[in-house]
Image 1 (cartoon, one colour):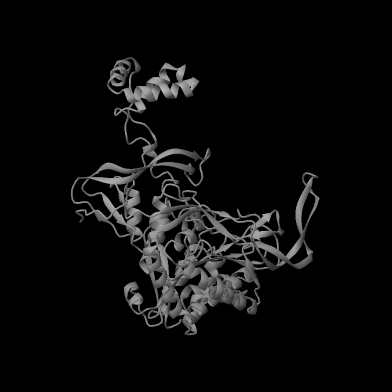
Image 2: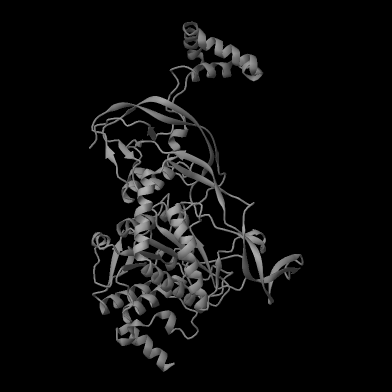
Length: 581
């Protein structure tokens, strides 16, 4: 006990023991550091290694505290532009997005210390750790993640606004997400890792892994990750005593039915990072394994990822440049995906037998996994997705300056934009929303749209104003541009309600007044009278409703507002000379 108190005092006072983490100080290794302990630890670490370690604060989270980034650089270069000029690889590791899954927080504290203490920072790799992303949730410390085996206290999944921050990367409702974007686009990582813990089935593995789904990743990077990087991580983790398996999402109930590759859409961290052509992974330790094993497994995975990135530094840089150039030239982009359940691989899986027994609560059958009956068998791994919806990029998108959040997010993501120097009417392609489905309950603060149907109008003349933004689609970040601006995209800005005001009609008519106007208009436009008569003959409901016939005339006349249901972002289809700032 005296020794433990001495170690704690030494840690506090900043002596030689200052490098011991709170996790390591705990006798049962079932403790995760608090936010205050994390910040104090890194402050002392940077003070001890001032040349090779530095912290940077970005933005302000919803809890009012900045997001802290620890950067390790062998030669003491901490300027992102200079690091890129030196052709070094940058790894970004995110921790604590779900504070109830804190393994990465404690493992990163130990790993950063060991890399510094042992002089193991690679010459050609700069390592960036987000110390604790969901500060808000971390401060709300308790035991709410009831299905989990340790640590004995931890933070809450939701942030101060009760947002799940791993559903916020496209919509960016939280200040945390805005600060993350600032970090990500400042350091422009080649490789990204987000540390998590899983829920779900019971099995023998401590660590599972989500890698960017192969059909969703750009083929240049997908070939490398599928054939070289990921297999090497699996091999090295097994050698370290942590056999690894793809993230376990069961096809039907239990893993025996097969597991399905996780499809990370852009709302998720790795769905967002892959839009920037970054190699991306999510670690998922198993919820029921002892906390210390989860921490050490996360430590091992991060170390191996750093080592392989160092080994392949030149190759990863070359592939990143090739991918950026290919995406600049890419014509067609996938907007949504669906699992191909006809194609699968057979992979070995170490599980526990699943069975049913009477519930002690209800007396009815309940699921359980029998740890006395481990097995190893081949199961189906469904890892093929097909694009169900695509869009061809235009020459440029034109975004009216009124849509300020879109503009702000594009700026944060380093999307190149230019502005019209004067009011001008352009011939563009426009979308009219003809149908959509909207959730009946809010999801992460939004009533998300899906199943969007469009009426595409070519050669539409639209007036734009001085200062409106023109976004050319000849950029390495084209995926982010197209997937956010195309309204049919699964996580487009439209899907997340950025443009909902254009879904409501602003003008109408008094029927007794419009009766006379409509009558005169039909006399002057017999073609509309014929169109009305034809529709009445096909549609008895229309024929029997005076109000519906009046509405038909209104909607087919110039009196009807042409902006109703018109998606406000226009597509410029031809190389048109524009006066731009």
